[in-house]
Amino acid sequence: DLSSPYATIKTHLYFLQPNSYHPDKAAKTIYGYKDEQAQQKAIRLKKILDGKGLRIDMTQLSKNEDYVDSTSVDKKHIFVLFPKKFPEIYLEKIGNNWYYSAETIDQINQIYESVYPWGTSFINDYIPEPLHKSFLNFEIWQYLGFLILILIGVLIYHLFKRLVYFILTKVERVLVKNTSEAVNQAINRLSRPLTLIFAFWIVEKLLPILQMPLNINRFLLLGIEIAKIVFWIYVFLKLVAVVMQVYADIASKTESKLDDQIIPILKNLLRGLVMMVGVYNLLKILGVDTTTLIAGISIGGLALALASQDTVKNLIGTFMIFLDHPFQIGDWIEAGVVAGTVEEVGFRSTRVRAADTSLFQIPNSALAEMIVNNKGLLLFRRYNTQLGLRYDTPPELIEAFVDGVREIIKVHPDTRSDAYNVE
Image (cartoon, rainbow, N blue to C red):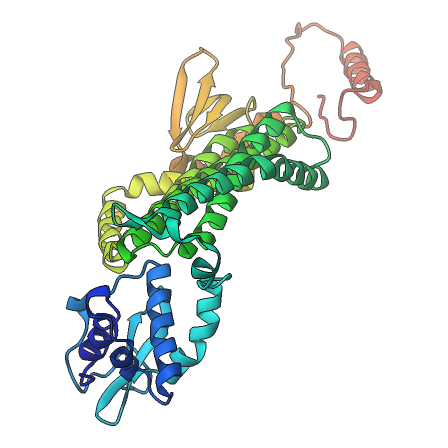
């Protein structure tokens, strides 16, 4: 039965099951090829799906004989099995029947060779007959092959760990000339998860060779994908730590202390971004509808943003302070009615220590809009005083005193001799 996408896929898969194995009937789903070639294509396509761990949910297949793909521009009679994971495999309607598309058939051999780089004929050619005996639904050679895969992964980890560390240190020394011990330790911790990701990738490529059942392959490949994402999250978190440590080393050598304050803020922001992207990818491979999730988060985010406008304003004010650099840690400032020494610039507020040792917390949104008088940037400090004189002081003596003060101001190295007034 090839009357609908559901019927065609069921025909293909059903007649390649061990209890109903009729490859000649499964080959009917392949259009335009002779019997032997069509059978080979049908078998290889089934092995590709098994090797990739792609399980077809029959309940999601269309039984509509005139099904039209609404996502295609020209509304073709095509049905894509895995739109996101494997868009190359799809069916198309030819006449009154549904077949695997010509594009799919043309790519089967190429995809098969990428999934099974050493083919599958070696199983019968090189594996002895005793190892083909079954034990708990698996052949003995499959158990041995699984153990060998684990050993290969462990061996790759130990062999490449030092190599990855060496490459990372070389790259880091090219980018940054002088590094601290903390940076070297962070890079050492970064090399381990990168090597593990590489080992998992090798195991993932070799796993289809064992020809495990679809459900087992799907479970193992899903586990590897989850492990890879977890390690990638760890890698990027450590990468953030390395970059922030390098930035901290550079900031410690600058005169400005405000750079030191932005490090924890920027570090937390980058960590949060890494975790969000990582969790999103985890949910995606677990089959969660991320489109609905994002829509829900967007609505929730809008409600949260409306409820926390002051927090958002303070956050924007924080970035404005870091961008404009109106002051730095340790400067004496006057902002509104507050005057004191800047102690800390945080996410939400800035702390200012007054002369009487009291502590003011000014919201960054308000501080960014205030007129800030930074006394720490004064080039000269104005001195204003008045001297009392007796009424019987002779005018000549007063003029001589005033001229003497003016002369002192002119010759003194720490006074501004071009802008003063003595009367």
